[in-house]
Length: 378
Ligand code: F6P
Image (tube, rainbow, N blue to C red; front, top):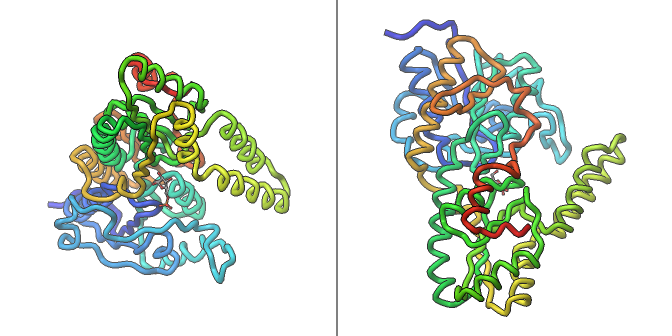
């Protein structure tokens, strides 16, 4: 017997960078929505793109079967913004089109699986009157309002395994190896994998480093007889000067008033980003010069987002998906289903969109790193 709800038909999509666990979450939501509540489910293709173009496929029990362990997203994804959607190369507000498509398909709700950018898109659709529930996905673990997001645990496993492997080669060749780890402008992934993998030095965006400090840690290790070092470097980590330049450019971009000033400030920010793009290679050159040790760089890149989700992500995605179906059935919208301990909590999207969860400098992972003697480049 199916449980009672007024909701009949629901759409679901995945948006932003893909992340292990997306299919597990689609399945968790879908099985509960269809099997437990008797809803009908359709999946929009390629994130916001499919929503704008009204491209979707029906999702039934058969479509949801066998996807729990599959990496990526069966629906496809994109990084499109609903209010600045590229039409003939020009940004256009497609919210009215999406509202039209939502009504045409007779939807009662829309489930959006994504990160911070998706939360902002979701807010815009909520403001236009749609019933939206957001599920937190990202390997970066930087979504505000939730303990964690699915994809993070898997990516941390992959990055930890990489650091483990890098250890034996760094040790054999007496080299410094810098392993660059994703995470956008947050250090969670690098800090977590760096600690779990026993990196000698961990560099994260929240703690700008100096080359002198990193080199000093490596030299101290040399004096103690360790003629190799493994450095976990977040893609967003910067030395103190670059971090100051970036912060100033970001502030300018956020405070510019006129459209002309905004364009100029955005162009300046992009220029600063461009100048800092190869920072890990620059650090490698500086450390080689400062320590005399041969230095190599390994960029983990998209390997961290690929493949089957680990058990923790499958479990998280399944329980968030099932909890989202409960919210929809009860008619609770405009929220993100947050992970809260072993449970879940509905957090208003206004408390999520436009915010980023960074590593607090006094976080217990940071404290533990210092206590076990990891260099943080300070
Ligand atoms: O947000 C996930 C993430 O993998 C970040 O860690 C990284 O900075 C970014 O996406 C890469 O984006 P893209 O897939 O657009 O190259």
